[in-house]
Image (cartoon, rainbow, N blue to C red; front, side, top):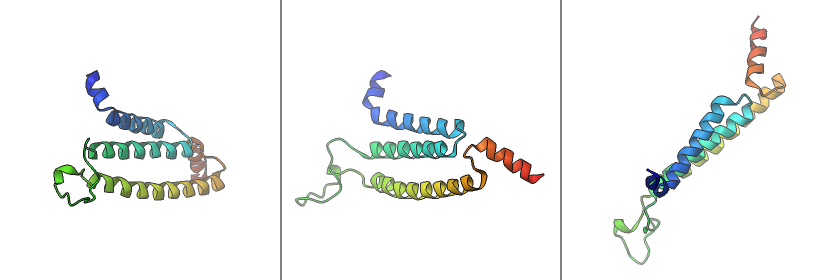
Length: 124
């Protein structure tokens, strides 16, 4: 089992990043820390996709010197998915941070428990 883990250390690190982010997302009360946890999860996912798309000994899919054999190049789809995911992730992070600023301006705290308590008091 240890040999498989060492051989696939990139995937293991990606899963570890995802688990750390997921635990942070679930256990933290502070909204900024939750956003950081979500970014850790994104990073783990992108690393996993990049690791799965890379094949040792192959080149990027750019035709050079007339070599058109598909066995000489890596699959470009995981790389494209990672780039698209990064753009979406940055946009979502910006939106979450702007909403967090608005929440702080209104409730003067970033603690989810305190915000829930204030909301319950406002309902009454």
